[in-house]
Image (cartoon, rainbow, N blue to C red; front, side, top):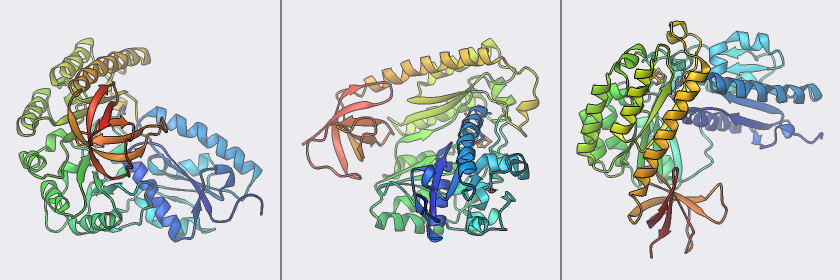
Length: 438
Ligand code: 5AD
Ligand code: SF4
């Protein structure tokens, strides 16, 4: 024995919740093959890196980490290294040719083929379009048993001009209601309390045979016993229907939070992004949401420095942030991605301009979030207990239905997954402080 075992795997993930959940499935498939897991790559016989290519920065981070694994393999040639996820899909065969020490690669639609890829002589780039995956229920190993992510659909048909996702995750495929509900019932039996339904564009969900809509799916999920809260990401504004707004309002387990990426406050830029809505359309949807669901929290994504973005377009984004008053926003510098239409557009901006605009957006949004959170001071709010805080072992953490983090000192024996009420005693930019009642 040289300090590692034949069937021990180390998994690392970059990127979005979809990728984190894909890694849970990779772990589930490997467990079926008899693998154990380690958090030390030095002890592993198999290393799988689940990558993200949404922005160049994510690719750079991954490539520098890959250098470390290459050195490990030099010391130990028997080590298997596999690259999964969006970079694997985007680069195809080329990735293996350029990085000969990587044994095999597989894209998000080919996790199901992992058992054959690990076998000697079967190692290659498994990146072909595999829509059957939407029908394959893969076992997942989830680290958290009280909250779980569940895929409802894969892929994206929208081709926003900046985005590589339609090229790495293929066309939209929805899972049948029955298999989604079956998976959630199993999770409920295992003490899961909160479900987050996952898809690139959940609002365009359609059951492949019954054609049931996303709002109808929510009704089915809402009816599952022992599940307390239902969330979903991500929504595309163009597909946010009145039916869905009413479902969020009427279904008691569906939480009052929506992540609704705006991307830009300029209708000209939105059109160049191929988003298929204007700022006015978006604004109307926000009005409808707030009218029907008082207190709903709304978060968004913004891209700073899209090609051709003028100072005025940037100002329009700042005005939109002020006008709408989002509870929170993720903002990113525009990044030129392979295969995308925006990559070829005129008017690409300097890194420095993009950085400056990003900084202004983040600072403004921080102030807005701070103001909104301050209004919660003195309120009594229900939270779902998530466990000991990652940043401070003396504190516990939970989340409101509106998806805000609340840290608190536990005053009685608490367990993960309990619903408790807390008085909000203080507020910060990215969290609240609370005192449990009773
Ligand atoms: N550059 C910067 N941000 C991007 N996003 C997607 N593609 C890019 C890109 N090329 C952002 C969008 C999306 C979020 C998940 O990532 O804001 O909503
Ligand atoms: Fe990318 Fe647009 Fe699809 Fe979202 S909706 S994954 S931003 S192409």
